[in-house]
Image 1 (cartoon, rainbow over the protein chains, first blue to last red):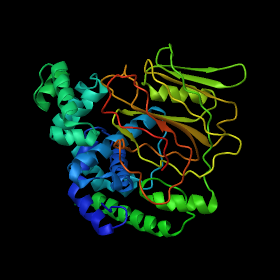
Image 2: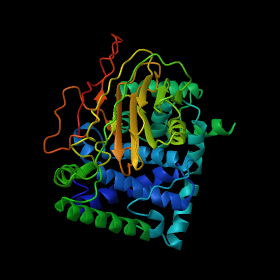
Image 3: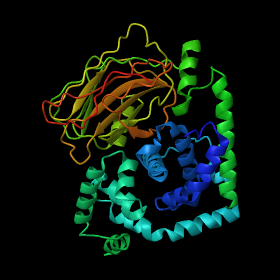
Image 4: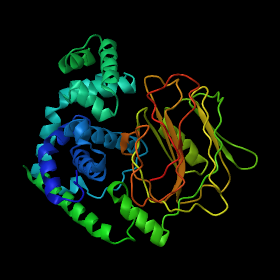
Length: 181
Length: 230
């Protein structure tokens, strides 16, 4: 992909995925300003690493979610140290009051998924990563494997373990209910 | 789409345009990813962003929980990592010793995108790169000599290991010193064993990535690692 060279390619890519990226982000943060920043950061990271995308190896969204996961992980580490990395684009500055309201609606809509993620927090990282992408972000197991850069068989094993650890959970709703118990 | 989405798209397109402009000017501030070629050219022309070398001795047989950072009598800092967890705490501990560090613990089949920051072709004079990584027990250790990492430089440690089997040796370890701002890690799959190195001019900074000798533990999935740059 030539996202970082070709504005038309970037625009097409952006329009295909901006909604999915925003949903991905608001499942993980509940601050609308931060969500805007992170949405911008995910696309910047995707542009910077577009050359790592290999069309034959998996879906675009799987690759993009892999990038998004890294952005979120980096943000969380920075948050612990109370350092906000200066990004090339400040997402929050692009929002007006209407946008803020819409972002808050998005955040509300994903409340249940944030609960599901919370319920998974105690799982080992490798297993949790697969379950997150499959149960919460609705990727297939193959796509989750692609996003995480692991083999499909590894992803299946981890998914199986994660579900067993959570008590044979089969749907995000069940994860959520269990998390509330 | 709402206004935010449209504005963000415009901002991203401006970023693309800016990148394109900067790409034609060799002496641009160094950034990562797609700017590799520009980075190589810039480094060759101007020698900016000198990445220091670091003489490290990595050995095995560590015994402390998670990690230990100790300053020895001669002012060196010994770092022993037994378990690859709590990277933030390790960074904090190193900061207390005056060493700015960025520690990344990645899944066993991933590494950070290269280059994460600009590097020059030359290390600091008189400080040859020396790096050895051993296996046995899954931990790593290294020693930082006084003055090896100066103000404005960051120690960048990346360890790739199978999170489901943290007791196994890492599949890849990389340790280096980077001058200036270090950008966040963008994880990418580890290179395939026989993957050709990317063509084109690349800065040959002191990047060391070596495979652990797994002592016949049958990690045939582990990509082969090599000392490479770029």
